[in-house]
Length: 119
Image 1 (cartoon, one colour):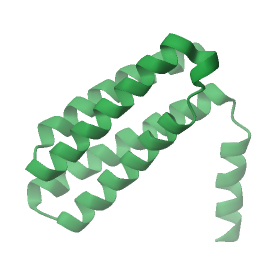
Image 2 (cartoon, one colour):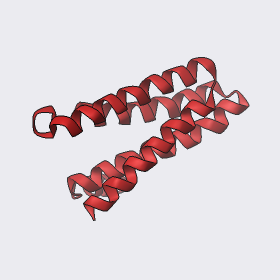
Image 3 (tube, one colour):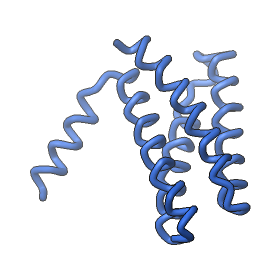
Image 4 (cartoon, one colour):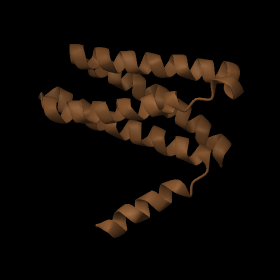
């Protein structure tokens, strides 16, 4: 088990920043896609686990924004991340998978952009 953890840590720490952002987007998308069927079947524990993981990733993306260096782009990303988090909280409260799908779509669009610039 220790070997797997070391491999995963090394994989993350050897990536460039653009690739790390792509990996974070992909993780959030994966967790949100897993949350939708759990929401639809009423599995509150699993749905909450997946939504929390996605929210943690979006919070991390928001936290590491360099507002000084990133200026307008960072400001716009922060607003978008906050919108995503509000949508996820509302989706959870109202059991609305459509709101989760909206966030997935936004994350997929951002992910495509980051893939293009980090290649």
